[in-house]
Image 1 (tube, each protein chain N blue to C red):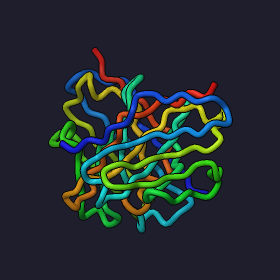
Image 2 (spheres, rainbow over the protein chains, first blue to last red; image 1 turned 180 degrees about the vertical axis):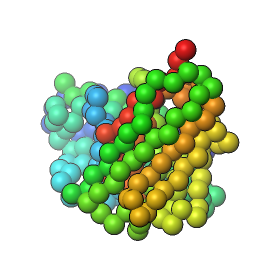
Image 3 (cartoon, rainbow over the protein chains, first blue to last red; image 1 turned 90 degrees about the vertical axis):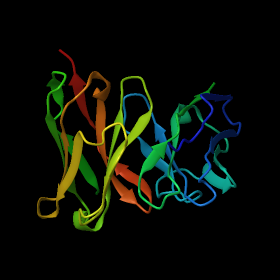
Length: 109
Length: 117
């Protein structure tokens, strides 16, 4: 079955740039979505269709995709950005079967 | 304002059944595809099922195929997940989520399903 691979953890100091990667064989043909999930809360969409930012999401959140890797970048990470981040995409078969990456714990301290 | 409110979770014995509901408001429900996503305690997100806006196209994760059934009632602005033959590994918070493009955008707050004797 199709898989998306993320690093388990990323750690940065406040004000630094955090980069979280997501690799998957179908990413050259399929969009990546990124979600932020804080403890005890529902996920929140922070990036859709590789690089688009929903309204209300701070400009420090950006996304990119090249080849088999998508990247979520948080420029000038803040303490409140500490959370779990998940990438999401669909497989290459043309259906809508989704898959999430395993998640990355971002620590900002 | 988009709102998704799940209900129907609870404690059920292994082999039992449960029906989850998701009430949608704040958008034209009949125009959107929908997903169910779950999260086991302390674990990551797992995509469960997809349904097209009309209900004519449906997909399931291999882990639930043949046991779970997704459906919708556009007249009632509601999404459902019928879960049969439940197992301990189905214990999770279940979220309904609206699909925008090819992925979820808005999520409900979730409903907890616990499968235990």
